[in-house]
Length: 111
Length: 114
Image (tube, rainbow over the protein chains, first blue to last red):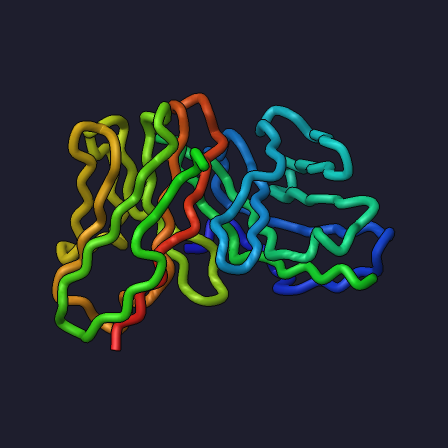
C-alpha cells in the first residue's frame, strides 16, 4: 500500500530552467506535506513544506503546490542550478509526526 | 557540529549475527525516529520515541528488531539474527516536538548482511 508515490524516477533539466517534481498521495489524513533533498552519503535534508489547508507555499527558488481534490502536489524549482542535482523525496505527515515518503525523483541539472 | 550523528556509518556482518547501531539526536530534541531505506526506495518509518518512551512501532519492525532510548538521549537499534533482507540504510531523525514537523536526519548506517 503505497500511500505516497513519485512516478518519475528521474528528471534532467538545463541550468536556469524550471524543474517540476510531482507527487501523488492516497492518505487523506496527512496534515502536512514535506519535500526533502538528499545528496549521496548524506541524510535527507528538509527543503520546504505545505500545510494541507494551503494550496501554495513559496521559499526563494522553491514553490510547492497542493491540489487536495486531486491528492497531488508538486515542487517547482526555478531557476534550477547545478547544486540542485540530488534525489528529492516528498513525504506526508500523519499522527505522531510520522512521515511517509515517496520513492524519490533523481534530478540532474546540466550546466 | 550539532546535527544528528549515527555510528557506525557502515557495518558488514554475516547472516545470523547481531548488530547494534547508535543514534545521537540534536540535544534539545525530545522526539527521535528510526527509518529504513532500501535501494531505489524512500525511507520507511520503523519506530519513534518521545523522550524515553517508545510510542509507535511499524509492522516492518519484526521481533528481531529492538530499539531503546534510555534517559531520553541517544538511541540504539539492535537487529538480532540478521538476514540478507535486513541489508539497507538505517536512518535516524530527531525533532523538537509533535508540532515541529521538520525532522532532522543523520547520515545513516549502511548495513550489509552477507
